[in-house]
Image 1 (spheres, helix red, strand yellow):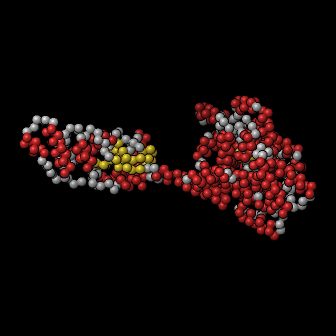
Image 2: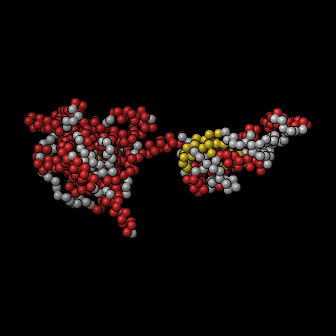
Length: 613
């Protein structure tokens, strides 16, 4: 590696690290940031516990993730407002990984995903996430909300989670177990907590009703001695020492595909969350590459402490912004408060009923569904509605990665179809230029001009260029190509094929206004020479018309040597005769000196046999 290349590499890496501007933001209003961080921690506690339990690694894994990943992402991330930790979307991905590879497999997947995110950040891949269409994101969110809700059915019904990784099947088996031995205590706790959260969010949005409802449910369970409400269980009073004991080098190959899925989801959800935070603030924009870098470091570190993969959390980030956060100090405070709870209040947290956490996540799933956004997207276009529904169904029936891939592919196909429909081939009248009226009429009998509008690429070329080959009864076709917005090899090949078919019928094809950036693709497939006459290119349509006229003169269709703009003296057919009579009459009326017999002779129609077309 040369010195210059090394310098560019380190410059790229250093741009991903925190700078003086970040420190200046932290000093701006630390009191507001500390208060915002405390509020977010109260909201995040039941979510971290609930998502840890849902992932299959336990509540302690959720807390470790919120503390470790939350702190590192706050320091190294690209947003001043992003709050990171375990999320429902990631939990959906982790459940089948736990079922197939066990807890150690999840930790390894998280580590690999973190390394991938760091690599994406160094490669500056963050900017490409902006190309994910809104219907895919909305359908993705709707599908995740449904999956999260279904995952809580066993906990809300107070039954052990059945085996399986398909949420619909697991939820159905849980309902069957509940029907055999109902646990109404768990149902009452879950429904009550969810109802308090949903009603409280409408009544007083600034109050964290999730922690209020969980505390109330825990107190009722303990005071009333409700046996049907199983608690979280013992939690360690602190974080475990970092360890790579889970790492099995022999299993890395089989875990690469799940790691790619986790990395893709972490990148997508984190950048989406950061974009939401940007929209809630004025004059603040996140750095997508730094955000990927911060999330990468967070996911590398979290498994060392037994944590699950983390992403930016949209709901917690929104709470952070709404409570007045102005810098990354708020998110760092949130992690510190959760760490204090882990060390000081683990015995109390262990008594929280699992049904209460299920209620928290049920309410979270309901609040994830933005009815207004879904309605707007469904009404926008039929294509947007199709992509949204298809992505949501795929998320529910398959998995998140396949759902996003399917959504992107379908959205891309529909977008290509819409773009292809903009391509047009229109016959246009010949420019009059400096030809006389009768000469112009004669030229129009032998020359036809078409204007190509829009993209000339694989999705559009065949449809309208095949129309070109159907032209009949002309000697020259002029293609006005100045409005061709883009061209690929397929479009150039189809154009070449159409031109060759016309040439075999004796029709000459000329082109005008070919853009410089399209010359290479035309030349590479051999179409450019077919569009030239004697090696000439025509910059404008009038020039192409003059070239077509010269060709017609050489072919004997038009008489040679007639000056443009003067009296054509051309006589051909009824139209030519009528034009000649008019021209002669104008010559007489203007007093042109002309022998009367010659004038009469000139006024007589002269017919000659037209050559074959």
